[in-house]
Image (cartoon, rainbow, N blue to C red; front, top):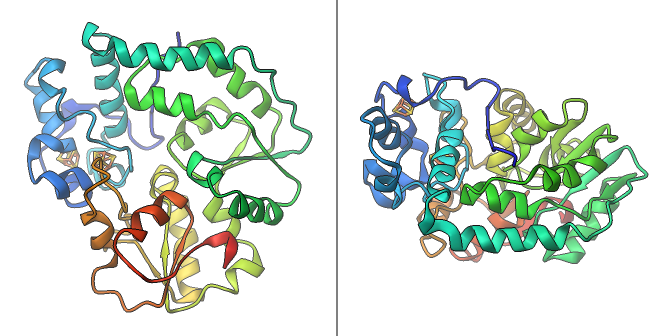
Length: 317
Ligand code: SF4
Ligand code: SF4
């Protein structure tokens, strides 16, 4: 079985290095929703320092939805998402979680019967399920990404397993990665696997859909100063040092607004509770804008709950 580790390139420390500075609270949607330090990176790190049992954290460890906002701000470079994923793995090994494990294992049995894909281009595109639910937008994305193949196996079961803390069988991971190894570039519409893909496929350039599309002159020229541009936060935070420069440049040339805070952390539009719209409202607070441009259809769905402003996908502006 494959053990999930999410070792972010610049985050090498574990929970024992948490100083309790609370900087992660400022950006964490769990804190914004619960106002309870148990639901924060700091709360979990401090609990682990006091050697609490994983069962005592079962109420809170699934609240993190891996937006990645906490990682660039942590001065101790703590690998916060791996901390949550490892806690989930420990809990998934307990008998109480066996129901969840059985459901994901059934998907793997089904996947094992599918033929392995052959990709004929050097560029591939992993579209997440939210985007796949909008075939016209997906088609427009593919028209813009010339000579790029839409990968049929988008690894959603692997993402789900990682969220649940379930170990991924090596055979399943190999079926997912095998066709991707020959690519020169892999574009992702959702960044949960971004860091893992960088590690699993060291010879492949991993890029976010937002970055690739905004580098196209015909897309760039259609952005304007009255737009609020919503960056897909997982890929952005996973490749923060490089992408912060890219979006800085975009801001200087387009003058549009972004879902960035003063530390240039991308504010997520969602939290762990899909019925809680405070995150989406917070992103829009005090803005004078005429249109919202999204990289991710998940962000579009969240923002539709709180505004009547037009919301368009980047590929369709
Ligand atoms: S990844 Fe996002 S939700 Fe999870 S602890 Fe960090 S900021 Fe909070
Ligand atoms: S930002 Fe890092 S060091 Fe500071 S409280 Fe959060 S996890 Fe601990």
